[in-house]
Length: 146
Image 1 (cartoon, rainbow, N blue to C red):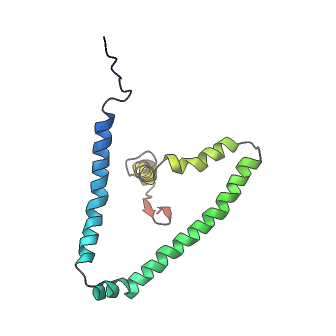
Image 2 (cartoon, rainbow, N blue to C red):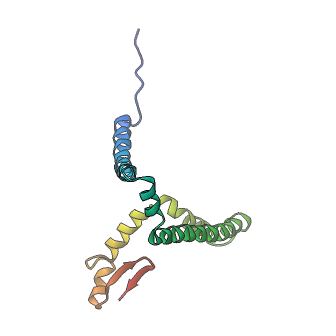
């Protein structure tokens, strides 16, 4: 009697998945464990003093305040965009829908690397801009040309 061997469509998937999860686990677990062990070496009083310094409290207010504002703005505009995309048919609707879906398919790091490559002094758009004496800078507020 012959046995039928099941072939995997993606050979090596188990090994590559295991290596990927181990690598990402280390990237997350090493810094997280460093924070935990550093914090564990403090007494409760030292921990509380560190966690309530004016600079740390300001960072809490900034992080949570901006996150709350961004969530509210995204909620309002996301609802409006979803309403328009579902309710109405218009020219360019599929393109607009694709633009909404693009951030889910294109991670931020990939977009940053692509923009840096394009606007580098020897890049596709950076070369003509540097020939004009302009420099491109990436700031938290966006791309600036100086």
